[in-house]
Image 1: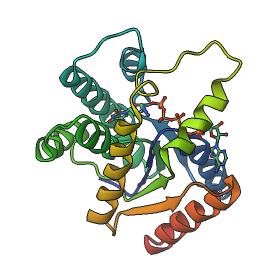
Image 2: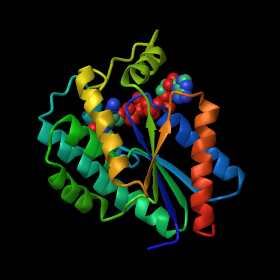
Image 3: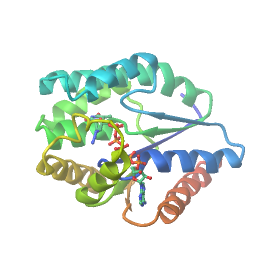
Image 4: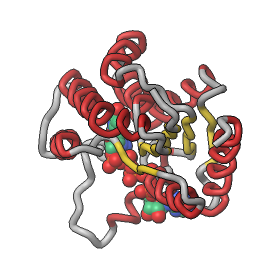
Length: 215
Ligand code: Z5A
């Protein structure tokens, strides 16, 4: 495979991944670089169908069904979007990827981490991010942000927004544990700071990666 660069943004809910993925994408496009911004669950037609079941609070899902759905989404996303774009030499930015499975289904739901590693390997066709930026903040701050966003709208909380605080705490700890285990790939960014400051840290990390790759 290819000359492309794979960047993932991870973190708990409301940490700013979607906003920062867009700002990073715009900054790289201004430098005339080829960029694809994508997300999980979703990012393909099949993935968007899976996403609507996955997040629907009215759909009751067994935890194993939840896990298999997110892996099916990843298998499609990798083969339909990620691998071809990377093979074409693009910079691909994904809002969530396989570390979310370790954090949510592993640390959050309690699935065996070794089993998840093997399943992630299968679903991702062994495609690993070149760099992962974990946007870290207290879960209360993230949940406040997402609540403020839906205030005054008719949107109901999704299946994950309705989970107990303890679940979200375990997920945050999961992301931090992944970062401790893989310091060469994963960078933790303090996401409590203003948008522009967080953006600058992300851009610095990506710029230094592109320089190392002579891109
Ligand atoms: N999931 C899983 O269980 N297993 C998996 O393997 C995968 C996913 C891949 C996807 O939900 C759910 O799927 C997710 C985990 C699970 N559920 N949870 N939790 P999603 O895609 O709908 O939601 P999300 O990924 O959690 O994203 P989010 O809630 O939209 O948050 P975000 O993308 O991190 O943040 P944002 O939308 O950019 O910002 C949220 C608000 O905060 C918004 O109003 C911003 O303007 C504001 N914001 C952002 N940054 C700042 C700063 N720095 N200061 C102030 N305000 C800010």
